[in-house]
Image 1 (cartoon, chains in turn blue, red):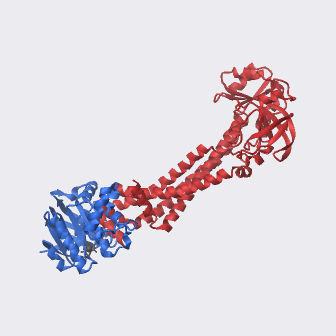
Image 2 (spheres, helix red, strand yellow):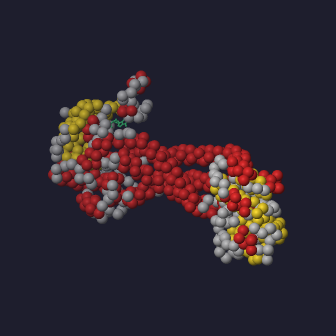
Image 3 (spheres, chains in turn blue, purple):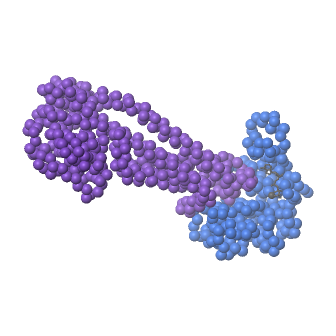
Length: 240
Length: 398
Ligand SMILES: Nc1ncnc2c1ncn2[C@@H]1O[C@H](COP(=O)(O)OP(=O)(O)OP(=O)(O)O)[C@@H](O)[C@H]1O
Ligand SMILES: [Mg+2]
């Protein structure tokens, strides 16, 4: 169960470029205060139950990716709290958040995110490669996941030789490598044709049926029918 | 472990040109480090050896030659004067004396030695107790036996040194009707020893030489540290008919003269290190900055700060190891192959470090370059790790 309470994410305008955190907690000089502030998220309250499939929709720049990154513990909100299973994630130490990211959360990015010096299978194994060493059973699991996203026998290919849609599917396989109970996907069907997109949605549904919680950002209204619920967001605020 | 090393190596060659530059710059750093320390070590070793040669701590000569003793000590030339070898036993009885080694002047040989024509002193020394020539003997050559000679660099040594490493090389010389073989060569000392041909004292005693039987020309004495003056006075009091001079003064002046040079060399090494570190940091921060998004992504898939450090430090270490290895190897082999040439072109006393100390030097140079590289990588990585992973991903996207 995930619960967001009054989550706000504020970015400074173009002048200092840095994130808000650097400024917070210090004496902020006047000229900084007068700077334009971008409220990517402005007081989000959201509750996602275990095993739910939630679609997040909204116009470009409305804060969808930011919201997903906060849920995925990839960025700290400026204000508010994020509870996962009753624990406030914003109060945890970075080390603890890293552990949770590794064990509980799978993230599929909006943009290509494969390492092009590695082959497809090694990309799927990346989380394990970074943390320790890859065993034979890990490799078999990676191959099984590749088969599951429809990329059987592509394990040895260099990742950059794959098409955009194929790369997206490799990224999904990678997100599933740690068997996380929570799957976050930022426009997973972005560059895909209708048929492949439907296929991927089918896969998401099956993952949900296996008990995973799925949160997906999408622009495509027709895909929201796979979800239990659609959350609409506009200018960093949830529409009701 | 190997998987990660392979991964890091692959990442390194993602930007072949940049990585080649990185490797080249570490190669230069490592070789400069190695080279400067090598010469410093050689000169230092040469100096220690010269100091020893310049007169041990105390030199003992027959009393009637006391006036020229200092001269003899500085020039290092053993001269035709004699005293009974029983002096040695008396010297050994002084508790502050650690080592005593005799030398005996035999003759001046006019002729050709190793294609060099000239007048060379022939001196006998005792290989067993010798401590003044020891530091100057070249590593290469044959074993010293009673039938072999040790020659100074001006007495043909320079010509011989290049050939010494070949087992087949045999240079022969007939002295006092006996056939000798040149077995070893002395590095340049800047003293009379350079013009000298040495043979063993035991052999000299069996030959028909002019020196009185059972005599020696000088006795070189090594004392307990700081006891030079005391021993000198002790000798003049207890041993009849000898004069003693100390080498302390000579050594002091030499040290004083050389201190600025040594300081300068160390300062240069320091500057090279700082420069190398700055350069590596510039390169690395550019390389790491470019991969900000990747770092954010690694963290998104659950890699902790340590895992990210480990990867980038491995990359840095590999680059430094490759570059440093190339640099050190190139310099070391060039130096080793051209020992003879280097000796000829240097007028400074120069004694090459042994293979073992050269290896230690090489490994240290490598380690230092590796540390510089890893430090250079750690700083920009640390900066990126302080951000939210998502911010790193977004900002690195462009
Ligand atoms: N690091 C940042 N610095 C400044 N502004 C930012 C930063 N990150 C996001 N923003 C701003 O926050 C707002 C929300 O961005 P976000 O990426 O969440 O939008 P989105 O809904 O995912 O859009 P899209 O559908 O185009 O992906 C945007 O106006 C963006 O300009
Ligand atoms: Mg987005």
